[in-house]
Image 1 (cartoon, rainbow, N blue to C red):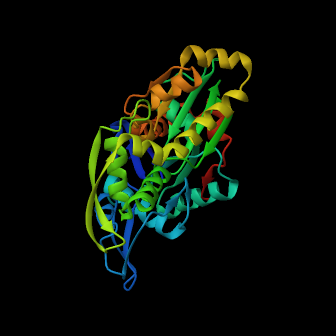
Image 2 (image 1 turned 60 degrees about the vertical axis):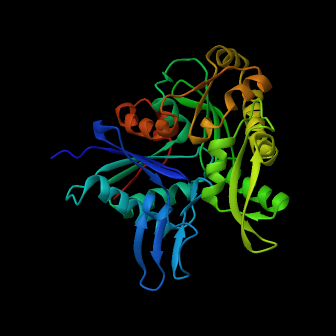
Image 3 (image 1 turned 45 degrees about the horizontal axis):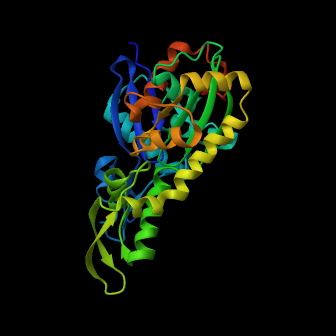
Length: 339
């Protein structure tokens, strides 16, 4: 019996999984909840995410992936195993799995990802660089001698890369990404309004109110939290302009990363990029006005990938068909398997 290959985008904020020809079959937050007294896993994914900030002291709700790399090996193994059981059920034959990782991580961090996959129950684990996977998932032909630029903005990192001839020419990663933007919003609300809000509220503000191109002080939304001076519930109005001020440093950190990669790119490829534009993928690519801001700042057109949230995961699923061509970012990375 043939077991479909599985592709995983193990993100800081979300884990997306593809299963054979079915495509994306799972997309849930990279969160796990467990009971510290009994050492039992209580929930993963969406159910665990609902528990953030709402549990008693003996129940921990954590994100075992921090800034694109594994911060807790055991909990990551448990989380992946639970998700695999959701998708595959209890199978006797273990699947092959390919997982995308940020292009900048070290060999030790790659080994941790590979070990987590093997412990979670696969017979062979491959790693692929995230920019390569995102390009494949977006349907870009990266096999030709033409330059393509991708900006993949996830929860923990923003990866910027130039890809040509199935390989990465130059790349740069920064930690100015979705989670850092949420923390900047929390910090702004604390400093300016003495209002304490949680991660879920900050994320909702980011999704609803962000306007990076033409922010207005007249467009507002109510924000509920706890006033730290009085210790009581409170509601304030925050505008697009205030939100832009709150997250400006994080956004321009991403802009500087794009500029740095362009400066390090060979001139011939820069011409290709000016013609093809910049491909935006990842959840952060959906920030309001980001494309217009990049065009205005760098004078380069931007294209938003279709199904931007799942681009990298789709690319991992497609990578098995191109395993003999992706010499850089696939076979160049250590291949883990049982000896």
